[in-house]
Length: 224
Image (cartoon, rainbow, N blue to C red; front, side, top):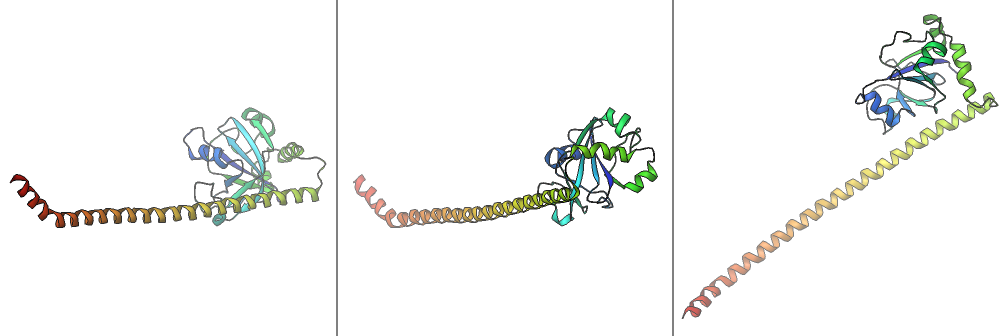
């Protein structure tokens, strides 16, 4: 299993797409980096508004054309499928303890999602104790879980995500078919209503043509 760290930023502004989308699907999915270099098994950390750090794990990666319908933006990036949240830190805890000298600390700035392998972390952020980070995160999972159990659990989580995607895709197809049928019958109803109006107009015209001469005679005799 590959080991590394991917970091994504959630902006402080309530109308920023990262904040809006995080609240919709951030606990399940997120876009990969610009270069699609995250891997299954990497840890995934949200730098959430410089208030918290939420840590997940990447349990599956989807191709761009497999993008879940719930994700409102479209890019050519891979889609990272995330585990449930493994750990939550305050920003102070992160920058002074477990995440000391991690990427974008202590000098913080928001940028695109970024990813590093374990070796790259050691090379570029040698003061960041990634081993300690992993040792703190891993106990949040079942300590009795052996490697085979972990592989089975992660495979089940990936299957669950795929099944959920299929469910949403089928539901979308049902909605599309329903909307098309309703639209078709709405058009037929509109055409039928127009036809009824035309028939009524023809009826009125025929009544006028047939009865108008008689009505004139009727008026003539009434005046006499």
